[in-house]
Length: 137
Image 1 (cartoon, helix red, strand yellow):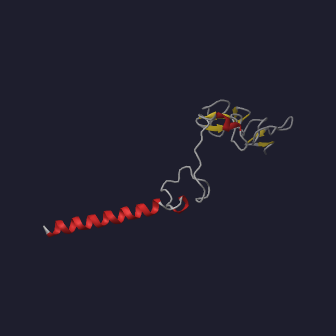
Image 2: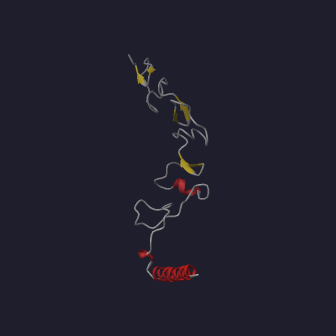
Image 3: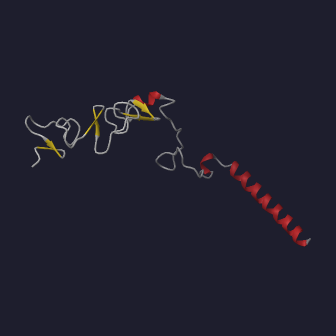
């Protein structure tokens, strides 16, 4: 019986202490409150206010803004279908192993004389592209 009384008194003291702390923190200005445990949507620096998470499927105009990865929206991401290996020429078209996306087409930079080693690197007339280099060996 004494244990039960002690337990109830201890529970009441904890409840009063908890409610007093909650009241004090709710009266503090926003900057003095504790940070949330989730940082999803937070800016680069922890002191910044969280920014809303925007995707191009809901707001396609963000793909045409300065600093965007590309003008097309594929799988909620802005991409350039002319150069993106995972969306080459159209959304969802992936280039195979050792191929890159040049001008919206999957090409092998190891043996393509128009895209030797990288996009739009032409080998001179009469030279061949071998292992991504013009006139290898």
